[in-house]
Length: 177
Image 1: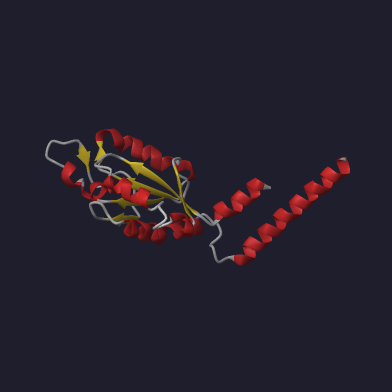
Image 2: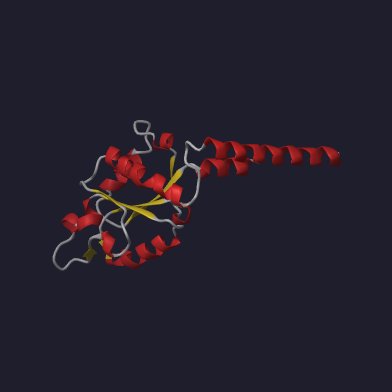
């Protein structure tokens, strides 16, 4: 029953995965700030995971270095369809200060994986990152065929189905006793 309840909640939530490909970690700190009570990311139904296989939205922060080119493509391949990518900060967009002549920084990240939203800044404000996630995240949920938060009929039918299963398993338990 607990798994069924978790599935209902997951269907109407946005799941994000942060991939830091190098840089000063300024953008990472701003993403972590989204988890603080001031921004309270979870009130929007957005949850962070370390596993790209559970992600609707992949957040890319940092300059893409030689070591990350292939890894980034593998991570992108592991994410379920449809894949939504948000590039956070100037580093994944242009390489910023790390993109010097003779360096092993490759920019932009869109040369390696498709990017759906870009948030420029060094580092961008948490509110700008949140706005980008909210702009592209619901599209990923809709494209996966999951419930939108306002779809009460589908939620009610799933809830009724879950209650019926719980009652049936409870009756089975009573019959065995």
